[in-house]
Image 1: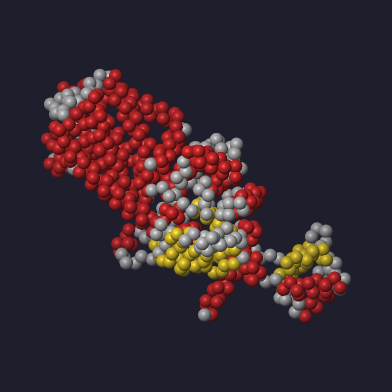
Image 2: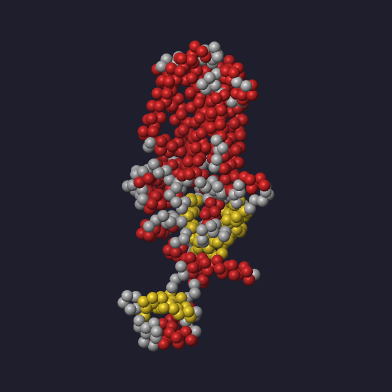
Length: 346
Length: 270
């Protein structure tokens, strides 16, 4: 991740807002013509994404992620605020923005299923003003990048979901986009394909192409391993932004899991009495007799190390001592709850 | 322009992948000329006075009516159908997210359908020639310009229907109303003179506001009766006015619909 030569961020969103009118029946509209109601989709979102950054958008369904994407892709106009892509305003010069930004939809719609991958790519290359030998060269180049060379003459309808997803990415890469918008790109992929796809994104898209990638995702692997930073959205509001690990640490409750055969040893009660551990619970016994004990260590990693030393010193045999990572769902839930508490206190 | 050609090529490749449907479509048109020939010959003695000045024989009258009908049906229906299909398959959103201009995209979405219709018209004319349709073939260059004006005029109506698809996902049967209304009142299968003489006055007045009335009459006079172009300039001028008006309204409606769809975020909803 680095700033562009001009110092302009890849994306700059300022106070961006969008609301949608709630559909009403004809009778209701006639009866109450001024009674239109609106649902906020995106509310006063401001943030910046730097060139080359891998940026994640997290949030429950209906959080506003797709609306945000559509506004950046110039498919939906904002009601308030503004957004720029490498300094170009999405409303003032949408065609210039479309030359730099490539959206990839969540599903496989958008492909011409009765045509070959080659024909699909040629169409979009032409729509992005590529011509002649440069067009063919680029099409073959992206086919190689996404690993579809050799299958390019097959009809897309015969492709697997993973291949179609790769083709969607290939289509987006045709223009050498400066910003790639990925809306839940691994939603329809099996775990192995999803892992391969993440590796492909890391190695082929973000790496050599130095492309800024903004990805809406529900996948913890994508959020925690792939993204440099993530933003958490809920009900259209930006609740938190930062490196995913930092957010996870900030909102996690320092819970640890210990595998031992001595879950009833007196040291556990002593540690609890001392306040070194809290909320002690035995979560299960393995078939071979090892027990998983979970506890909260309020003092964090340093105190966890002391707890481990105390356990060993007391003769407790330990097969594993791991910090429990916060799930993405818990992280989002905690951020949402924390912001709600902050606003109610304010 | 290249964007339009690329989209037309995709439409062609997609249509060509349904080889049987393509063959049946052409064969059916060729065969359609058989009943047209016999109906034309049978009714010719009765309708000859009514079509005087719009073709010397009823078979030729019907052939040119069929050409007009095929063209207006395609012109009106091609755009809303392409937009509806694009919305349902998700391709519309993606082509609108490219830097290609909206007019070139709209032309590209409909161009193949219109060219395919022209090919079908040639099949009809060829089959009709085999059955003895005596047209002034050298006049078809001039007639083509008038037919192109008919297409442009009705494409304007198609743009209004397309705008309704983009904005509301429904056209309220606008295409059907325009196509059937024009066919009934515009002189496709019987002369508009009959409309004037036999039907209530208000229906006859409707016939006057159907662009096809003027276009078909001019085309028949040129191709069947060999009238000079200047003799049909009145009809051509009226058609040109319709053309400007329909294309203007259609462009306005489409611009409004796209702006509305972007504002309401419905461009890609299906």
